[in-house]
Length: 216
Image (cartoon, one colour):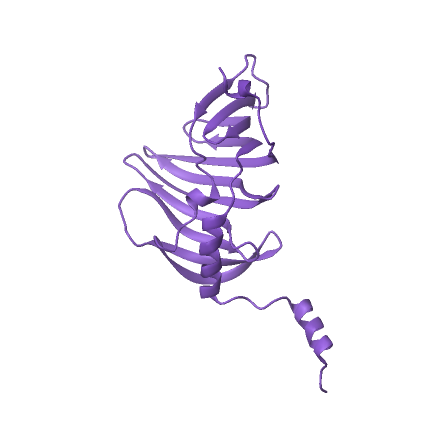
């Protein structure tokens, strides 16, 4: 039986759009990484858990404006600190997607498969740096979101003289930006196993912060 165009269109909607060619995905990914917007000001909560030589359970509130950072410790092992714990400093956002994402000019990205992440199709690529070194931070895999073409997850390994680690950083939409949601790491430090988990959330992006925010 011959099918009409409306019937064919309805079938396509039910089945979902066909996966893109890997070259098209990488072209869109390269553009998305170069144009992704970073918030000028952000406020968020992160909860960190460490297990190993040192066990840690903490919850923090972060105020960031550019490289200026105010870090307030909200709880330690489930209890509020007796004394106010506030650190003020300057440093880049180490988890920013534009900072960690592997660039096609620096990595060979080999398509592996597709997967569903956050209810959306993601394209999984193996990542191999063109210039290899025995130490430092190296991305090993990236899952590219099929709608924004930004990384959903970035897997990595890191080596130094006394430590070896493997981990993953997950990202998702927040207030019009693409922000980290979870970071997990398994490591061996001086021969001892260690694990760390950092969950990010409760993002806000105000237009300004009072100058006292970053005053000691």
